[in-house]
Length: 155
Image 1 (cartoon, rainbow, N blue to C red):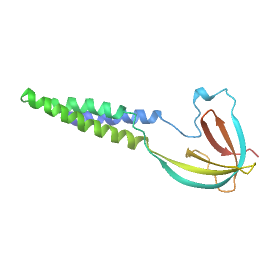
Image 2 (cartoon, one colour):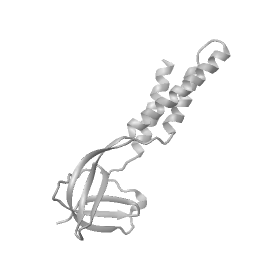
Image 3 (spheres, rainbow, N blue to C red):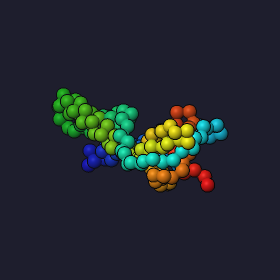
Image 4 (cartoon, helix red, strand yellow):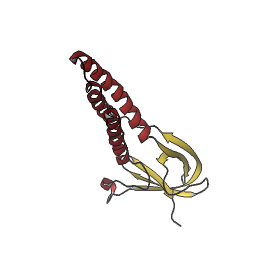
């Protein structure tokens, strides 16, 4: 029962962290507001679905390792056995925490190839947003610092 509780805590912690990470083109960071952005006009040439690999910040591994160590050493018996089980639990918990974090932060995205009005082409990968783009759509590429997003051009 205690191990199930520990696993639940790890999953909840990693899921909470994953919810904080958002790369949707529909979500703008507060620090990107009230800044001038460069806008370029273009036409969508192709769109293809891609998967953005999940991140491994190490938080999942640390949380999993701590919970695994506590769960592994919580049994009764000789102190040396408890220490060994604690180390094994920490290693297993860290591996599980990393895997959970990576899987929970993976997201579906699209690669959009755009031909600009000057003839140059750009490829941008962005998370799927609320807007569905198709080949032939007129779009704008908005660049703010190192962040880029593609959206349908206004009429």
